[in-house]
Length: 334
Image (tube, rainbow, N blue to C red; front, side, top):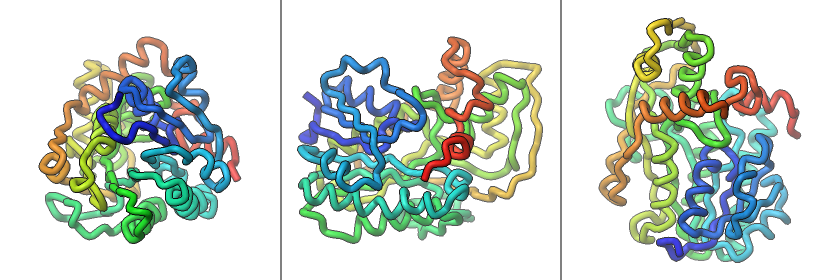
């Protein structure tokens, strides 16, 4: 039995990057997990078909009827689904809004009608925008720069502004996630620098001086598991930053080079319009929930190196399955 009263968990967007690491971990801890996802990136749980506590539903979150059915007998919802990252969002803003924001009301309605007890929402630290402050806490006023971040923040407001059958609600504002997962992404800072170094022996540094908070995907999994088991009085209607190492893009590039150990690896500096730069403070989750990150950027890089050397990555720089915007352009989702 899981160490939580919320045994039956619906993970919306569970076949994505974070979900592909989270779901197997929840299954090992004996949660009954239902994954609700379009599976655009393939059957990431093909090796888990014998798991009796795993249910998979291939469906769109804009389908209210299917959402309602999927939410029956569910104790907790972890909502990960979205058109993720700014370029993918901007490819089709109307489509992205329909998934990232409009469909959010469908999910809440399904949760309310099925008396779901706890709702955990995956937001992003990018809601803070560009900040001059040394430490960005949960009390810092968000100033999102893009529609992707703006609608993440709007969903937060909707979630915390309603009373929904006494449902417990909490929000995770994650730093940029890094490290290997079954549904891999190579459009995130640490990951893309690593795959460039492995394949081309050249690390493209877009800008370089922007400060970015990072979190190993294994720690993100741990955070969601803690949110499932934490007492109501500690997390209800609370927002938590979840980050660890705050580094500039240039500093991350040097870490990648050091971990791989390639003297032949060179740097290529590329101008960028991405001015996001911020240093998030994650003291609150440590104080309230006693959560301290255990895994590092270095460990994340090594996990990618290991997967690459073991043949688990197929054309990491060009294969659309690893790049959200490339896949969105390919499939033309409507």
